[in-house]
Amino acid sequence: TPSFTSYSKQDFNENSQIRLAKFFSKLDAKGASLMLSNSNPRNTEPNDDFFDRHYGDYGYQIIEVTASRAINSNANARGAITELVIKNNK
View 1 (cartoon, rainbow, N blue to C red):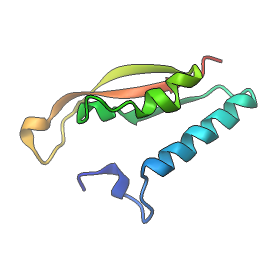
View 2: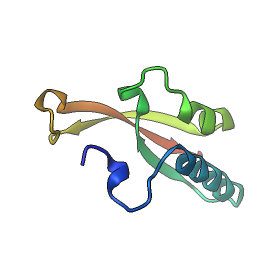
View 3: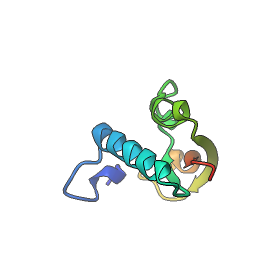
């Protein structure tokens, strides 16, 4: 499948991401040390600021890391991409 959101019966869409961000904040408020990762939407949409708005604006640290992809249906798209690691600095 070309999309990791297709691996379950339920779509993992923007509303799902917002629910995850709210859950992340709830756990942070309880004192948990948190880290999550996600594909960087700027790999395909350079102006996408979703993670900045839902994590960065709340003081969470967003780190871009390079990841290598050896499998892709398009051979020209294989190689390095960026992913996001989001932490709450606890």
